[in-house]
Image (cartoon, rainbow, N blue to C red):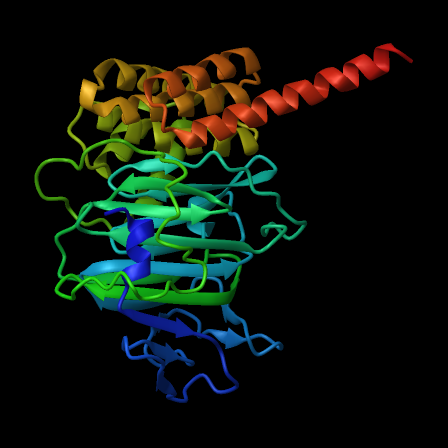
Length: 389
């Protein structure tokens, strides 16, 4: 069952909104389906600086370096979040939302915001988020992150599109964690968590929480395609991932790309020299390439970018017949690099088209191709208008 459809059958809903007093306990049963509204933070654990309340009395301010967390029984788990996150240019300054084994990081790429969905592998989403002068999203982002352990998948729903990543865990408890970056606070307008333990029976008649949509809503896209890796996974917390990424950036800046690859591979989940390993490694290198370019290390960033393309090419070569979505994701990411890093729009167009031929359901590639073609058509119209003057 797709995680988006599963959202409609969730049995329990936890929602926290801020009242005047954070410490007051106010829990009210809402429906016969045992929905619970938590109007304070008393059931959430906070580490780092204490959260505060904005003047509008409806927004939680999560201070820089702080984290809110809560544990739920293993099962369907969905988080609906509305906020204007800050998009950090350094790994330790990335805000992150963690739902079970999956995390969503908000990263700065050049002058726009990007997102990385990290499950069993990292996927850089093709969406470019407009940023304000404060480095936050220009408009509030309304997103839902759904984890379905039965399908070993997490789905991100954002702006009418959805992106899926393989996520595997055998843990009996799942954690939802919201972490602000080390330098900037994170105002949270709405956080709504919905959970259905695995032992609970499905109830398809229950209504979805805010932002969920109807059970007939289709999945609009996928950014994955790899089966879960064989064997048990070693849990790696967000802090360890961020530190490993920071170490990989330092190695790349120093020109030691072999060490960069080794460092990223240590926090990966797939056996070496497989399509999953190549794609996961390339996804991390993409972030490093853009990071180094933004810092002015043009020569180092160009070398990393070329390495990205090499890994993506090997991913396509290694992908089996059953991994067409993985090959499509690799071609899509290669198109993204040609488009936004190298400025080679013709190569980017060909790569996006190849991705759609191999994996027709790769709707994020379709969206990226449509945006590229629309941009080229606009530039051609501008050129024609200028030549007629």
